[in-house]
Image 1 (cartoon, rainbow, N blue to C red):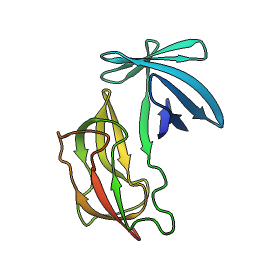
Image 2 (cartoon, helix red, strand yellow):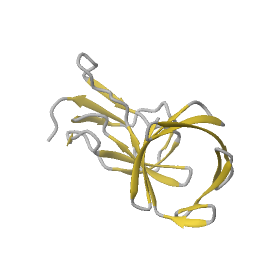
Image 3 (cartoon, rainbow, N blue to C red):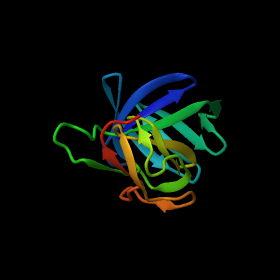
Image 4 (cartoon, rainbow, N blue to C red):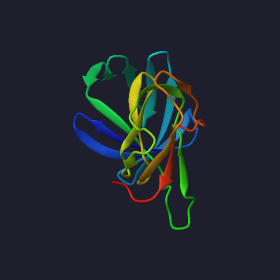
Length: 160
């Protein structure tokens, strides 16, 4: 999965590969092995011998220090020449829908937020993987979703 993480105003694109607890994180062309464990309201990440405690709930604290963070899921390139004319947008992880921003008939650009998903006590924008027209919105605010659920169906084509 690819994420765009803005931490204290500094934005980076991060790729995470593998299934927990052991994952590989790629930042700025450098691959870093990370071991992650999740507690009730925190995640512990072992990164190159250093242990980071990420606490969720009313914001983010890293090793006890409050930090301003925003995470956006970056959809994989879904529209290549010859690809399907309909794209199903799915969440990267299970969670609860806190806001639906798209409605059928909306013309959207690539990267436009479609849905806000709360997972691990953080709110994450689920973006349009490509420009197109919203054909169907399959969730409502408050719905619980799995990583296999279709949130929004986009018809590929020109956006506004």
